[in-house]
Structures are given as structure tokens and as C-alpha cells.
Amino acid sequence: MQGYRVTFTEPLQAILEPFEVNEQLDSGQVLVKTVYSIISAGTEGAHYSGLEEEHPGRGNRPLTYPMQTGYGNYGEIVAVGENCGDLRVGDRVLSFSNHASHVKVNTGRFCLKAPSDLNGKKAVFTRMAGVAITSLRSASVSPGDKVVVIGLGLVGNFAAQFFTLAGAEVMGIDLSDFRMKIAQQCGIAQAVNPSQVDSHQAVMDWTEGKGADICVEAIGKSELIAQGVQMTRRHGEVILLGSPRARVHMDVTPMLSHIHLQGIRMIGALEWLYSTPEIDATKHSITRNYRQIVSWIASGELKTEPLLTHLLSPGACQEAYLGLHERKDTYLGVVFDWGQI
Image 1 (cartoon, helix red, strand yellow):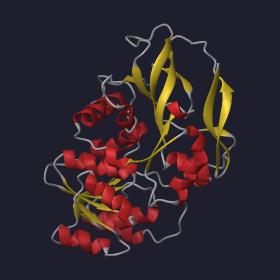
Image 2 (image 1 turned 30 degrees about the vertical axis):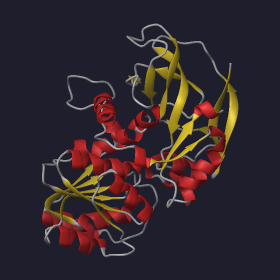
Image 3 (image 1 turned 90 degrees about the vertical axis):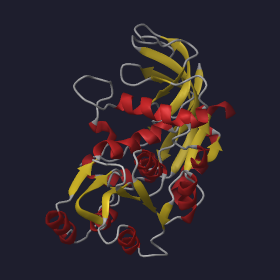
Image 4 (image 1 turned 120 degrees about the horizontal axis):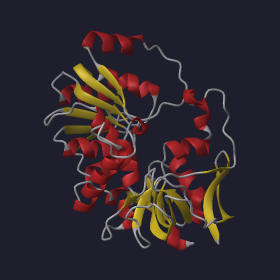
């Protein structure tokens, strides 16, 4: 059977290419026909642009093209292998699979059944919300806390929504009025644009000079982490939700001094610090996080509709990635509709 998949052939070049689908299933595998898949502007964008090569975690390993991409897939099971639990043909599932018309999913890793009555265009946003929820899980937030979220892309927007659901007061910071407007449509009432106002002063005014209880950096820029520290109160927390990649030269002493003198905790919030399956040894897991997110989306407590700015055919993949890379004032949530092939 012939399928189609999105591939980066070189930096800044994405194509939709045919491939032969291997329909042979191993134990624990299901074959899924993709309905929708969502682009991760951060991680995928870094591979698309080549920025990922600067990631300190890579060492000296260069990026190798061509490469398949994507890790947010919503689709329908069309074949089931042995030992797949209660999964059946026709079930709609979420998985960490590539942008492809057909994917084989290891159910032992992650394959979450979605409610049959949940709109797939909403359900697919679970993937990016799953990245964001770790900021909430990592923080010691209490109702009434004042939380600043730097960056209102998909991950930052969802982080802001999660802290609001937890009873915190939230202020978002972003250079894009477009993203600020969408955040407000998602229930984030406080938002400032640092190109128009002094964001540090805005936070100080909002917190009566104390600083935020929690500051979440949701972009992954080292200089913004440093700015976030200066916005954080005594005994507050700075959550590193974005993955820093680009190398910068800066004086870190003011940041470290503020952390030291004010007793601030800096916490990494990488999704993969949590186990994927639900196990008794830990309170939280990726699977538990995703079950909760699906419930919030289904109930309408977590907003996704304003975030979907582009629903595109996979054949428009170059337009999609270039738009996210260059036109952040119009592109935010980009979903591929695999029914358009």
C-alpha cells in the first residue's frame, strides 16, 4: 500500500513524498490511518531551520537530511496486532507518530484512545498541551498566585490556560499582538507586548512591586530566562518550559545573583522527565497528563478553537513550515488534514 509522509530534504525545505506502507504488524502494534497531525513549531521548527544543530545536547553530531518529522498524530486504527489490549479497528487514537498518511504505533509506548464524540481538530491539540502541562506539574502553584508566562505560542498559551485552571492569576508576555489577542480569546485576560511597554515594570506594577510567584519561560531563549528571573519574587520559581538551543553570549552574573539572594528556584520542565505509562511509583505520568488534557478539551475548559489558524493539506507542508518560521503574526496552530490528499 502506498502512503505519503512529510520529509525535510534540507534546511528550510519540506516536501510530501510517497512511501510504501509495511502492513506487517509486530506484537503490540496497531496500524493507524492518520486523520489530523499537528506541527510543533518549536522542536520541528528547529529541525526545519537547522537551529537544532546548535542544541548543546547534540554535542558535535550534525543534523542529517532527509528526515521524517512530526510527533502529534490523531487517527483511526485500521489494523490491530496481537497483545494490544482493548484497542480495536475503528478506534480513534492519539500517538507520538510522524506526519504520515499511515503510521504503525507501538501501543506499549503511547497510544491513547480518544472519545469517539470528540472533534479530531480539537483532540490533536492534546499533543502540544502535553508539552505545556509539565510547567504546571513542576510548579508549586496555589490558587491566587501570580504567574507570568513568557511566550504565547501554542505551548505558552496552553501553559497560561493550565495555570488559570489551577486558580492562578496569569499574565502573558509576547511580542505579537496577534498571539496576545488569541490568548485573550482563550481566557488569558492580562497580556503585554514588550515592544510597546516595559514588561518588567508591567509585572512589578501588577504584583505591587513583589514580582511574580512563578515565571514560565515558554520559548527557549536564554536571554528571556534571565529576564524572567528578574521578574520573579523572593522564594519564587522560574520554570524552564522551552528548550534553549541557540547559543548566546551574555553576562549571567545578575541572573545568578538574583537567584542566590532571593532564594529563587529554577526548575526544568521537560516532558520526557515523566514516565510514559501510569505506574504506582510516580504520581504523574505522560499518559495521566494526556487523559486529563483530553478531559479538559472535551469539557471545553481548555480552549483550542482560537489556536487553529491554519488547516492545510499535507501537500502544503512547505507553506506551513515557512509560515511558522517567518510569519508569526499570522501562523500559530497549524494542523494537517490528511483527508485532503
